[in-house]
Image (cartoon, rainbow, N blue to C red):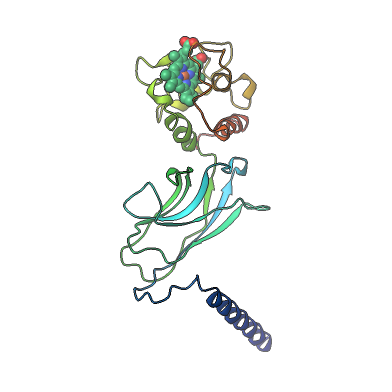
Length: 239
Ligand code: HEC
């Protein structure tokens, strides 16, 4: 057993030094001539649920953020895992002015549009941080609220007592205003869990002829409409 362990460890060390020399040769992994202390690494393992709505046009990033919440100081892109739903991510050399790490979605301007997970960093961090495994529900209702009803400004018309069609799409109101509620402009429900054909919301967003105010140009990313359809087909989870 001991001999086996020794052999195993030696192999490991050999491999490590090989990797080390490869990365040194490439020259772009270790900073040179910089005397400031290296930042710590933050590693996280995320178990992704509802992979059908893994982002396509948005980027998913694991990033370190400073006081500016809108864009990351440094980040890694999260690629869709091919055959399982777990991703292991690491941000190396986290900048000293970082105050948190986040798993989030960004748009083409690298601005954060939605945050799934956030972890606040201690000011006086001295060693690498391994986050506990976290489950991330890609289809949480808050993503629909923010990425559809708020990002596309539905709330500008659908809010308050005078809201269009008496439909409130504001935070905390939208779910109960739509799910299992009959539409005022058709025989369908606004949203019928498990039945996207009978959910007028999708008609309004994809067909100009169903209400007097055309809505088809409002949701500019088709993946956000796909997300609504998948959410409805899955029975409208509210978590
Ligand atoms: C500029 C104002 C405006 C914006 C922005 C807007 N709507 Fe509307 N919406 C309306 C009006 C007006 C109606 C009613 C049209 C009619 O009377 O035929 C309506 C109707 C609807 C209905 C039908 C309600 C029912 O009970 O039949 C839905 C669903 C809807 N909107 C969803 C949305 C969503 C989702 C967004 C954002 C992507 C959005 N709206 C953005 C003005 C707006």
